[in-house]
Image (cartoon, rainbow, N blue to C red):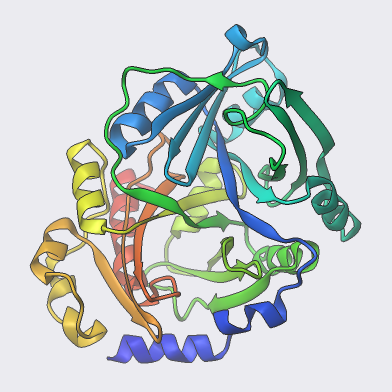
Length: 386
């Protein structure tokens, strides 16, 4: 049970979820993740991939047919998760610069708020750089107010106030009618989103989320906690008061070889969103469906399961079935979780997804870090970037 003990020691040095309401300020109430927008080289083909492989459904569309001249956006939805895939239609400009520099990647993490004007005012007066001043967008279905601020790298947060809107997604979009909508795979909501920042920047961005957005640090991992024989990293998890928005922030740490964070920074050309963790109520069913549709997951050696029950205690699932799918398990004081990570879903070794099922646990799988990072290192070695 050594790894469970290690997790308890780590948690004892952090705030803990039970203290969030004491530590996180309430000047920026967040209702949830509204949407995640990726700038991509070909939105139509990317949409087909996310529908086919991840089970997302067509929701909305904007482009030449709706009067949008400079870009096209396809909006996909699965339960409470909404992806927006955007591609430029003209040369030059911000979208092309972003794609040329980063490849396909997350530009916008949009947060659902009650008052987008107040969210912008509160964050900018605390030092955030404005990305979008509050603007009212309207059509026959009502009004949406949006505003935005810059965060790490070229990533931005947009605050979305939609209490007076009854249309599909946003004004300027129309319902996307499609005959091709494969079955969902059981993804429910965004559990957390992980940002990678450069050497020495983790503290700065954790302070940003604390000061500018009122977040509290709930967990901290040092390079002693997250390391293998070759590579290491450090991480802090920031959360808003109600726990609906959680942003782990990673930075590299010294190791014998190049870490996954360094590889990401090199190929993304700066800080950005490393992975999106999406929740499911049945990880075996979800992972099985995704694998059948062509999604590739990191390989977990069978030896990981040899002493699994000794490490995590009794679980409801059949270990042999978890072993068959390569699903990782970890436990904290509140319960346990099951998780698995895809290989990068874009051409560069940058963005990937985590599939997670929580059965009480509120942590992030520290007991799995060694197995996870060794799996990532095997992929790095195959790419020649370790």
